Image 1: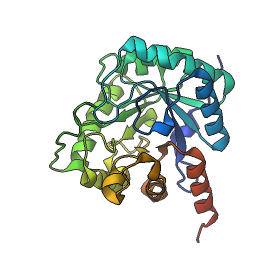
Image 2: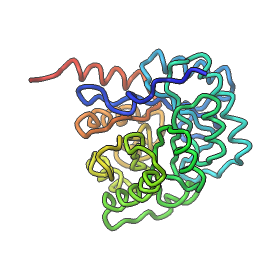
Image 3: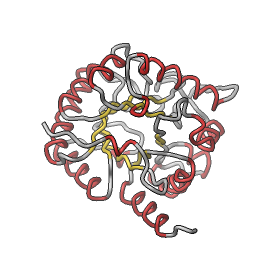
Length: 281
């Protein structure tokens, strides 16, 4: 099976332009309804559209981790996601594919089906995930989350959110390093909206790369259409949050972000292209 050349896609482009990761949700309940796909055909069409629009990565997930979401069984998660990974790899042989899962068993099946990377929102809560990543030599994204999706927004609290998130990410990364995983393929995600209120989210975004526990690690932001834009801008409906998402994405260029995970690939690609055209000496 041909796999994508993913290593260059872990770091931003020249000029600090982040790589774009498009979201492909094989779920009936993801928080942004327009991102959901319900059939293999629609998933393939969505993936091909994102590739045409400029995606460097496609992140495929089959379990919603929105606030208040209930977990799905491993068998159901695998049933939803593996045919899509196989199909996307077949029709887009050069595309970098990420599997969005907290479970090592699902990650293993997805890697076998053609995925290149594991995107783990639980930062290795499954004790088998470290060994899997080390054995496969694949990149892994570790995200900070206070609590679980079903309760993470009940009452999130921190003393110093940047230091605490950095410390949590460091603990997870240290386990990977000890297993022989190269720090350059361990991606840090501060987990915007995962057990945080608006002030926490803004502090973590403003911190940029200072939240990353090892300078060799890439940084990923997942901010697209999240509830922070309701609290910040009064945009209750996720369909009204694109402008806010693009505003944050524009700041990513100066803050050392390597990958930005988005629902709207074309709009982010246009944003970055336009900004690149206005380089000032």
